[in-house]
Image (cartoon, rainbow, N blue to C red; front, side):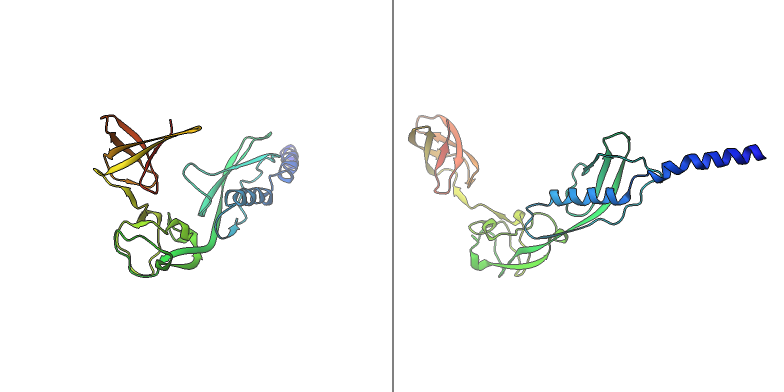
Length: 228
């Protein structure tokens, strides 16, 4: 019995340095918070980051170099899990729960809008809230909406999203268009017929008078520009 007791004491004594050297939850928490600060830099609004104290496995080996990451497809937005791995002397990885809130302005319709309408500043209002609870593709800057065309009808006060608007059609299929070939130190103009509708920035095909078909980018003045 005395030998068994002595062995138990030696075993417990051997565990004491391991427990004392366990990875600090505060260190992991700080790494996650700093990582999320970097991920949210430049967000249009007031960012707040909450990282509750993580529950780490007992006696997690200490690590001098922690590497945080986001799972594939995830972003620093709303409730999120952040992975943390040791890339130093230990070999472990875990996930830490966090929440990112972004309070800022977003656009809503100032009146009922119909499909095909071109948006002006008077058609927009701004409201303030937690953008992370508003869903994806929210418009936050009037420049994202003014001059764009409504794809479908929305009621007054409805939050506006990128999926609701489009650049106006600047080139219509079957209509004559000017084709500009722009190179370094030269510019060549030609005439043709558009083979499809195009919005600003779209690629459109044009049949020239010679019968040749070319492709270029639709510009805001209704021209097609080609860079050789």
